[in-house]
Length: 52
Image 1: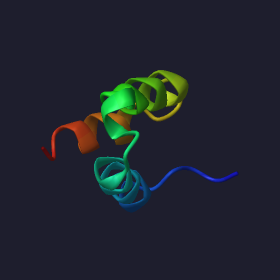
Image 2: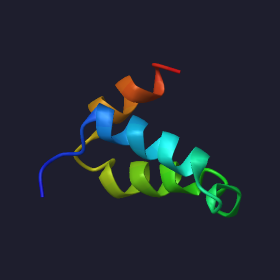
Image 3: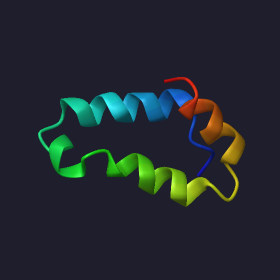
């Protein structure tokens, strides 16, 4: 499985916001994703976080 692209993360975010389960996640997907990838995606994650 290749690296997760910024576009994929943004699309996933939009998908969750439109999903009935979004409130249940309460944004925890982002914390999980960053924690899962911070060992080799620190630069990319920081860049994406700064886009907000």
